[in-house]
Amino acid sequence: MNSENSETTAGRPMESIQVDNLLINFTTEFQRIWNCNGSGSTPCALWRPVPSPDSLPGFFPLGDVAISGNGNINGSKIVAVVREGPAANGETAQTNALSPPDDFEEIWSDAASTPTGGTLWRPIAPEGYVALGTVCSINHEKPLLSSVRCVREDLVIEATVAELIWNDRGGRSRQYFSAWSIDPPVADAGAINFAAGTFIASGNPDSPVNDAEVYSLRMQIAVQSNPAPELPELSGFEAPEPLEPSQPTHIAKLPWFAVEDHGQSALKRFQESPYYYLQRTDRYVLIGSSHNTTDKNSLYQWTLPRVLSRRDLRLFNRISAIQVPGVWPASDSTVERPIKFSARLGEAFTHTETSSSGWTTPDIVAVAANVTKHKMMALYQLQSNYDLWRDNRTETAINFRYSDRNSLHWLEYPPEVATDVIATPLPVPELPELPELPDSPEQPVLPESPETTDTAP
Image (cartoon, rainbow, N blue to C red; front, side, top):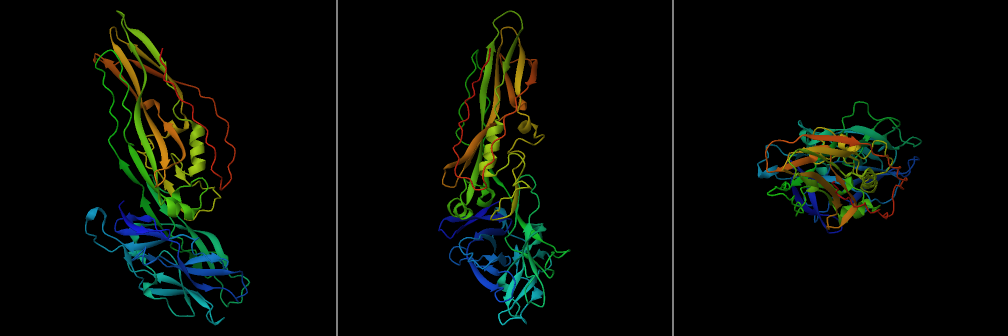
């Protein structure tokens, strides 16, 4: 995933999400196209995203926005807009990412009911492209083909019709219609699927179109990888302490809408930290060492301290909404989000290439080793520290660490044959559940994680 610079309404640069030659950004500026005043139904309004020519040149809406009520949404609502971009990796794109619709198909109209009646239209996409929303016009005139853009079908993902936004039941229109939101599908590992913020219209006031084809946008989570730390080498009968890492090993870049930040509003996150950076820093920790100075083999044992605190992990999730590992937000979440999305970090980033059991059963492990006579043995463990940073390089949420029994590394001096090692899990007591936090919590006072002391007999 590459990116291109544009600006938010606050003047800060917002790096466009790039999927092949499709650029995706966001706007908070709209023009009201129609409202249902005088129809006798509950209030509603249809708005068109208007990307600023100064901060978002060349961007187009994907459809109009349906709102229950007559309030002004400028500066408070955030929706996606798109633009044709360069091909990824500097290559030449074979096919445009965007296309105007070929035509519009009427869905509903009350143009005959009131002088300012509106008409809803379904964009008819060219072959190989799909429409992601509905378009409104005043009276019965078709919208201009330049009003919206359709997206190449390989750049989007099939979605589902979700909640009812508004219907005109009780109004005086000769036809009924309803507006429905769109839910993205559950994300695969390393991806984010997200709705554009548009709506789907139906000629039935109580149910969406049964065979409606709806789509959401998608992106891969960009991960920057740096050289991994090197395992220390034994050159004598003393175990060296590992070097402290000078930089994160992996950095996952997450857009503002996929992260909560101490109850800050979506608009503030969008304007002040368009991206958040979840860093994973790997380091080797010396667990213990033994020098067998006797003339016979000897058994030595160590107890590995528990690295992962499930309490810290749960608190991190509650503050940031990010699930490690797994999909977020949870399917039963009742929090209203500015952009509907489903996200999942990559398996390599979360140490789940083969199994996720290390996150659910972080056992303390007793380790025993048979050290050969006149040998030196050292035990190192690879630990990963996760922390979350804003665009301005200030830290948010709470950090946590991870390791599992597969991360142990034995070194012997002088190096010869492999040593017999036995690792046995010890039971870990369950921690009490954290108290429920409100949907928009004030910045909590975070508990200090206890320092872990590496011990060896």
